[in-house]
Length: 410
Image 1: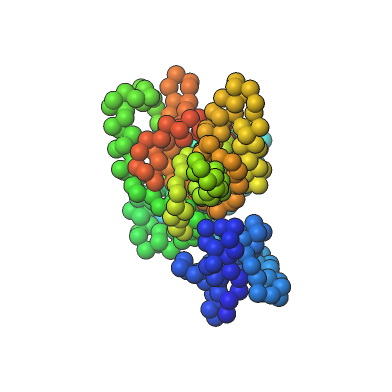
Image 2 (image 1 turned 135 degrees about the vertical axis):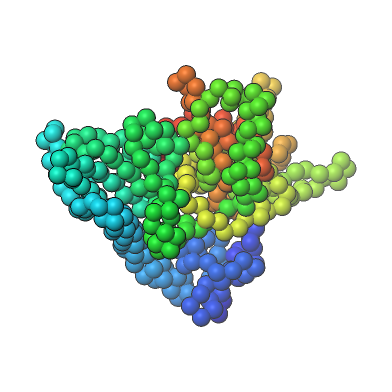
């Protein structure tokens, strides 16, 4: 059954969305969600055979969304509880008397809840340890380490262990080494719990979105950065790496409708299309193509940045930039508006311009946060092209505070 069909406002014009049993299918793509269909409709990209079909999609979205949130929160709680049980079992096997979710008052008077507390005594002395368990879907940050160390010191524990199901960031590892905190990541957990037990706790959930396919892995990206470091570019050789991982950057693909006057004797209007890609943190133009970009479904977990700009206002700004260029009279103003338009990827000269949303998507990039002598900046390897991106590095460096907060590294 045909549910809807894309209209001429998008590069997917003519493609149908159908329902096959209980599954929605996009022609030449595959399964999609009801919320995706509603998003296309809200951007004015769909034609509906009937109002009833659109209402049916709205109902599907409302019935699917709420249970999914509850299930996700419940699953996260269960994983944390399961991890605590496994860690308690390891300590008990080592001769410790173990308590879980123990509340104890510290020397400061503050009350602390401890995930797993272990204590053993030989009759003369007692030895205690605190274990903080994090079954997060992303590596733990340095704040977790510092807090666990503080709690252990406040209650007088001799040792503190922090367990991270997905490991720890570079900043967390460095903080742990400085504070004497023992870290148990995936490898240590497999050694102590066994591969089967860890697999039973591990996160399987994905965050799927449309994006560009990466062409290199983390090790290769690191080698790209290493080559630049050896050359001394950006002064990387003297900088300490605080964070390095794959980060998905929000982008907007805009379909520009370009009209030009063509011909010397017989003037005619020639219409062409150009697809521009912009990052949606600051609105920087990245690249353009005459063909619609090839987007695939990607897993943007665990690190993806939220868009800071709105599509409609951004596209309106593109058209306004063109209008200023078109109406400029004085040479100085004309040159100023020409520079501004070209920086935004507008292919001058034109007689008319439209800017329509083709797709919101994500660009894969390996981001390093580096610092030297108190100065921090971002160094970015574009995982779509496999090359160092000075442009994206310049975009992210002024936004390091936002970047570290969004990634949980602050």
